Amino acid sequence: MPEGNLFEYAVIRTVPRVEREEFLNVGVVLYCRNQKFLRARFEVNENRIKAFSPHINMPQVKEYLRAFEQICEGAQDAGPIAALPLAERFRWLTAPRSTILQTSTVHSGFCKDAEEKLNMLFQLLVLISETDDKVV
Image (cartoon, rainbow, N blue to C red; front, side):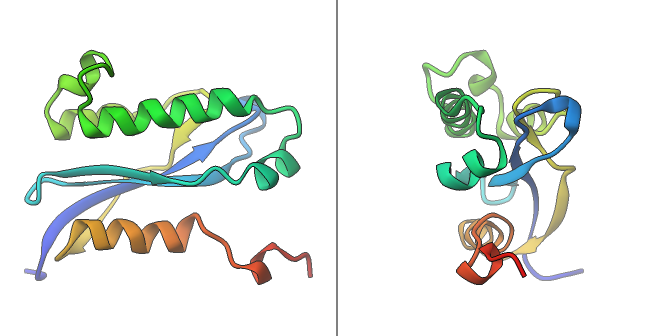
């Protein structure tokens, strides 16, 4: 058996026009049962998102991401979903939907430190370097 704790994650995407199925990665949500860990990390790069979709409702995207984060945290003012156990919150957050904020399919792996794994996945799947931003 692999060393470490089983974790599951999904990429959080903004989908400005759902009918076109085009998206930008804006975050990662990670769940690890053994570490009682459910957290989302995201970054709203407004310039990049606006270049992709000039008419996107940025306040709405930010509001949805804040709600996503509050559900992960189990915030008391985040509604009934935030009161569910961690696993159920993760399943609800990663369920398929047709909205401006969606997640990828769920992927899994093993880790020693869920926070460290979340940061690594965030760097790999969301943040871009300057060279990645240039058109070749």
